[in-house]
Image (tube, rainbow, N blue to C red; front, side):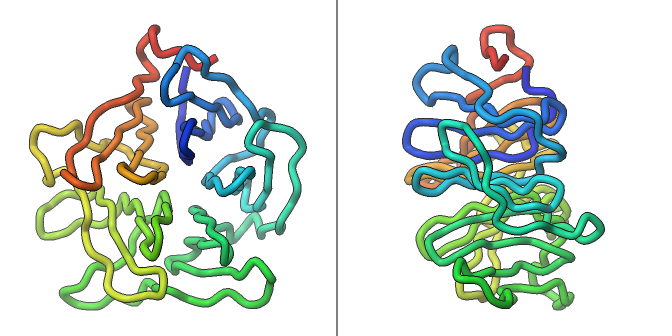
Amino acid sequence: KLNYPVAMAVDSDFVYVADLSLKAVVRIPKTDKAATQAIIMNLSRPESLAVTGDDLYLLDTGDLLRFPKAGGTSTTIFNGDPDDTASSLGVDDTGFYLFNAGALLHLPRAGGEPSVIFDDDPVPNHINLRQIDGIAIDGDDLYLLDSGNVGSSGSKEAILRLPKNGGEPEVFFNNNSDPNSPRMITPHGLAVDSDSLYVTDYSTRKILRISKASKTAQEIFDGNDPNDPIL
Protein backbone atom coordinates (compact mmCIF):
# COMPACT_ATOMS: atom_id res chain seq x y z
CA LYS A 1 0.00 0.00 0.00
CA LEU A 2 0.96 3.63 -0.30
CA ASN A 3 2.37 4.44 3.11
CA TYR A 4 3.85 7.94 2.76
CA PRO A 5 3.41 9.31 -0.79
CA VAL A 6 5.46 12.49 -0.97
CA ALA A 7 5.93 13.22 -4.67
CA MET A 8 4.41 12.43 -8.04
CA ALA A 9 4.73 12.94 -11.78
CA VAL A 10 2.49 12.08 -14.73
CA ASP A 11 2.86 11.41 -18.43
CA SER A 12 0.29 10.39 -21.04
CA ASP A 13 -0.03 6.82 -19.72
CA PHE A 14 1.14 6.64 -16.10
CA VAL A 15 1.11 8.29 -12.69
CA TYR A 16 4.46 7.93 -10.89
CA VAL A 17 4.51 8.18 -7.08
CA ALA A 18 7.53 8.38 -4.76
CA ASP A 19 6.81 6.89 -1.34
CA LEU A 20 9.06 7.92 1.55
CA SER A 21 8.21 4.90 3.70
CA LEU A 22 8.60 2.36 0.91
CA LYS A 23 11.74 4.19 -0.32
CA ALA A 24 10.47 3.46 -3.81
CA VAL A 25 8.85 4.90 -6.93
CA VAL A 26 5.72 3.10 -8.08
CA ARG A 27 4.07 3.39 -11.49
CA ILE A 28 0.27 3.41 -11.74
CA PRO A 29 -1.32 3.00 -15.20
CA LYS A 30 -4.06 5.58 -15.72
CA THR A 31 -6.37 2.95 -17.22
CA ASP A 32 -5.53 -0.17 -15.15
CA LYS A 33 -4.58 0.37 -11.51
CA ALA A 34 -4.27 -3.39 -11.01
CA ALA A 35 -1.09 -3.27 -13.14
CA THR A 36 0.66 -0.97 -10.64
CA GLN A 37 4.28 -1.88 -9.95
CA ALA A 38 7.36 -0.60 -8.16
CA ILE A 39 9.94 0.46 -10.75
CA ILE A 40 12.64 2.03 -8.53
CA MET A 41 13.58 0.63 -5.12
CA ASN A 42 16.13 1.11 -2.33
CA LEU A 43 16.06 4.91 -2.28
CA SER A 44 17.33 6.88 0.74
CA ARG A 45 14.87 9.76 1.20
CA PRO A 46 12.86 10.59 -1.93
CA GLU A 47 11.64 14.19 -1.81
CA SER A 48 10.45 15.22 -5.26
CA LEU A 49 9.82 13.67 -8.67
CA ALA A 50 9.52 14.90 -12.26
CA VAL A 51 9.18 13.27 -15.68
CA THR A 52 10.21 14.49 -19.12
CA GLY A 53 10.74 12.51 -22.30
CA ASP A 54 11.97 9.02 -21.45
CA ASP A 55 13.40 9.98 -18.05
CA LEU A 56 12.35 10.35 -14.43
CA TYR A 57 14.19 12.89 -12.28
CA LEU A 58 14.25 12.40 -8.53
CA LEU A 59 15.52 14.38 -5.55
CA ASP A 60 16.84 11.80 -3.09
CA THR A 61 18.45 13.21 0.08
CA GLY A 62 19.28 16.34 -1.91
CA ASP A 63 20.93 14.48 -4.80
CA LEU A 64 19.37 14.92 -8.23
CA LEU A 65 19.15 11.54 -9.98
CA ARG A 66 17.95 10.53 -13.46
CA PHE A 67 16.31 7.15 -14.10
CA PRO A 68 14.82 5.58 -17.22
CA LYS A 69 11.00 5.74 -16.96
CA ALA A 70 10.81 1.95 -17.10
CA GLY A 71 13.25 1.68 -14.18
CA GLY A 72 16.92 0.79 -14.17
CA THR A 73 20.24 2.30 -13.19
CA SER A 74 20.41 5.92 -12.05
CA THR A 75 22.66 8.72 -13.28
CA THR A 76 23.65 11.44 -10.80
CA ILE A 77 23.06 14.95 -12.16
CA PHE A 78 24.43 16.65 -9.06
CA ASN A 79 25.11 15.89 -5.41
CA GLY A 80 23.33 18.08 -2.91
CA ASP A 81 24.48 19.31 0.48
CA PRO A 82 22.77 17.12 3.13
CA ASP A 83 22.48 20.17 5.38
CA ASP A 84 21.00 22.44 2.70
CA THR A 85 18.88 20.43 0.30
CA ALA A 86 16.26 21.41 -2.26
CA SER A 87 12.79 20.17 -1.32
CA SER A 88 10.95 20.37 -4.66
CA LEU A 89 11.81 19.78 -8.29
CA GLY A 90 10.45 20.60 -11.73
CA VAL A 91 12.08 19.82 -15.09
CA ASP A 92 11.68 21.14 -18.64
CA ASP A 93 13.87 21.44 -21.75
CA THR A 94 15.71 24.45 -20.35
CA GLY A 95 16.73 22.97 -17.02
CA PHE A 96 15.67 22.33 -13.44
CA TYR A 97 13.38 24.34 -11.16
CA LEU A 98 14.20 23.92 -7.47
CA PHE A 99 12.75 25.28 -4.25
CA ASN A 100 15.52 25.77 -1.70
CA ALA A 101 15.77 27.89 1.44
CA GLY A 102 12.65 29.88 0.62
CA ALA A 103 13.60 30.71 -2.97
CA LEU A 104 12.44 29.32 -6.33
CA LEU A 105 15.50 28.78 -8.54
CA HIS A 106 16.20 27.82 -12.15
CA LEU A 107 19.33 25.78 -12.89
CA PRO A 108 20.24 25.58 -16.62
CA ARG A 109 20.81 22.11 -18.08
CA ALA A 110 24.11 23.35 -19.49
CA GLY A 111 25.30 24.18 -15.99
CA GLY A 112 26.28 27.47 -14.45
CA GLU A 113 24.83 29.53 -11.65
CA PRO A 114 21.13 29.24 -10.80
CA SER A 115 18.87 32.25 -11.32
CA VAL A 116 16.24 33.34 -8.80
CA ILE A 117 12.67 33.32 -10.12
CA PHE A 118 10.99 34.25 -6.84
CA ASP A 119 12.38 34.62 -3.32
CA ASP A 120 10.91 34.66 0.15
CA ASP A 121 11.22 38.37 0.91
CA PRO A 122 7.85 39.16 2.49
CA VAL A 123 5.75 41.63 0.51
CA PRO A 124 2.72 43.16 2.25
CA ASN A 125 -0.65 42.30 0.62
CA HIS A 126 1.04 39.88 -1.80
CA ILE A 127 1.35 36.10 -1.92
CA ASN A 128 4.67 34.86 -0.58
CA LEU A 129 6.09 31.36 -0.91
CA ARG A 130 6.08 29.46 2.39
CA GLN A 131 6.55 25.71 2.06
CA ILE A 132 6.68 24.48 -1.53
CA ASP A 133 6.09 20.72 -1.56
CA GLY A 134 5.57 20.26 -5.30
CA ILE A 135 6.40 21.92 -8.63
CA ALA A 136 4.64 21.16 -11.92
CA ILE A 137 5.42 22.78 -15.27
CA ASP A 138 2.74 23.54 -17.86
CA GLY A 139 3.87 25.52 -20.90
CA ASP A 140 4.91 28.96 -19.71
CA ASP A 141 3.52 28.48 -16.20
CA LEU A 142 4.72 26.89 -12.98
CA TYR A 143 2.25 25.36 -10.55
CA LEU A 144 3.49 25.32 -6.96
CA LEU A 145 1.97 23.32 -4.11
CA ASP A 146 2.32 25.54 -1.04
CA SER A 147 1.33 23.77 2.17
CA GLY A 148 2.10 26.75 4.40
CA ASN A 149 0.43 29.68 2.68
CA VAL A 150 -2.40 30.99 4.87
CA GLY A 151 -4.35 33.50 2.83
CA SER A 152 -7.36 35.66 3.56
CA SER A 153 -9.58 32.62 2.97
CA GLY A 154 -7.96 30.83 5.92
CA SER A 155 -6.99 27.81 3.80
CA LYS A 156 -3.37 26.87 4.42
CA GLU A 157 -2.96 24.40 1.53
CA ALA A 158 -2.92 26.11 -1.87
CA ILE A 159 -1.82 25.50 -5.44
CA LEU A 160 -0.24 28.66 -6.84
CA ARG A 161 0.39 29.56 -10.47
CA LEU A 162 3.43 31.61 -11.41
CA PRO A 163 4.92 32.53 -14.82
CA LYS A 164 8.23 30.79 -15.55
CA ASN A 165 9.94 34.10 -16.13
CA GLY A 166 8.84 35.42 -12.75
CA GLY A 167 6.06 37.71 -11.68
CA GLU A 168 3.28 37.66 -9.13
CA PRO A 169 1.94 34.24 -8.04
CA GLU A 170 -1.80 33.71 -7.89
CA VAL A 171 -3.89 31.16 -6.01
CA PHE A 172 -5.16 28.67 -8.59
CA PHE A 173 -6.86 26.21 -6.21
CA ASN A 174 -7.31 25.71 -2.49
CA ASN A 175 -9.72 23.96 -0.12
CA ASN A 176 -12.22 26.78 -0.50
CA SER A 177 -12.33 26.66 -4.31
CA ASP A 178 -15.15 24.11 -4.38
CA PRO A 179 -16.99 23.05 -1.20
CA ASN A 180 -18.05 19.77 -2.82
CA SER A 181 -14.51 18.66 -3.69
CA PRO A 182 -12.35 16.40 -1.49
CA ARG A 183 -10.06 18.43 0.73
CA MET A 184 -6.28 18.51 0.70
CA ILE A 185 -5.21 17.51 4.22
CA THR A 186 -1.43 17.00 4.05
CA PRO A 187 -0.60 17.46 0.36
CA HIS A 188 2.96 16.72 -0.69
CA GLY A 189 3.55 16.22 -4.40
CA LEU A 190 2.13 17.84 -7.53
CA ALA A 191 1.95 16.91 -11.21
CA VAL A 192 0.17 18.21 -14.32
CA ASP A 193 -0.99 16.94 -17.70
CA SER A 194 -2.98 18.57 -20.48
CA ASP A 195 -6.27 18.69 -18.54
CA SER A 196 -5.58 18.19 -14.85
CA LEU A 197 -3.39 18.69 -11.81
CA TYR A 198 -2.64 15.73 -9.54
CA VAL A 199 -1.91 15.95 -5.80
CA THR A 200 -0.68 13.23 -3.43
CA ASP A 201 -1.75 13.41 0.22
CA TYR A 202 0.50 11.45 2.54
CA SER A 203 -1.72 11.25 5.65
CA THR A 204 -4.84 10.13 3.75
CA ARG A 205 -2.77 8.03 1.27
CA LYS A 206 -4.89 9.37 -1.57
CA ILE A 207 -4.38 11.01 -4.95
CA LEU A 208 -6.63 13.84 -6.08
CA ARG A 209 -7.15 15.01 -9.65
CA ILE A 210 -8.06 18.69 -10.10
CA SER A 211 -9.61 19.85 -13.35
CA LYS A 212 -7.78 22.88 -14.76
CA ALA A 213 -10.99 24.00 -16.48
CA SER A 214 -13.54 23.67 -13.66
CA LYS A 215 -11.16 23.86 -10.66
CA THR A 216 -12.93 20.92 -9.03
CA ALA A 217 -11.20 17.92 -7.43
CA GLN A 218 -11.99 14.21 -7.37
CA GLU A 219 -10.33 11.27 -5.64
CA ILE A 220 -8.77 8.87 -8.16
CA PHE A 221 -6.68 6.60 -5.92
CA ASP A 222 -7.09 5.46 -2.32
CA GLY A 223 -4.06 3.74 -0.82
CA ASN A 224 -6.25 2.47 2.04
CA ASP A 225 -8.59 0.61 -0.31
CA PRO A 226 -7.72 -3.09 -0.80
CA ASN A 227 -9.08 -2.78 -4.34
CA ASP A 228 -6.42 -0.18 -5.13
CA PRO A 229 -3.29 -2.37 -4.87
CA ILE A 230 0.23 -0.95 -4.93
CA LEU A 231 2.60 -3.73 -3.94
